[in-house]
Length: 190
Image: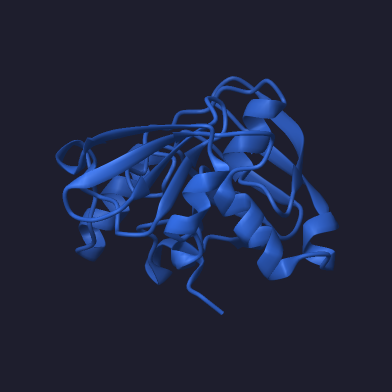
């Protein structure tokens, strides 16, 4: 099985309606063959090499990476599961229903909750939440997530997928950046 970040190949570009080429300098964090999606605008970035990024405008409800990931676990029990996720915001706690196949941030947005985020790749730490109670989530879609982050209870909500009921304090980016600096790990915007 291919690495999850490498499952989208060049052939998937044909699944997109429109294509626009931009310079890779403006989005230098991507690796070749990797697709990043923005569910709200149905746009995706597909890296084709060091100098070219293709911005694809998506067709239908699923992006190519969702389809590829669905093919990996197609029909499994994971796809059908959903969990109660309590997001403890600075304003008030809010409970959402999060499908195991979707990122927590996307599920919160679909439920009408606006959470901070910039990159939607699990790199910038802007979307950071921290577990208030023990729980399980899948952080594997994050570009930059470390075992030390998990041990400290941090989750990057833009890429984390619930694997149990969760209670997460949101808006923890400052604390996670301090944690990363203390551990000698990358801490963007710190």
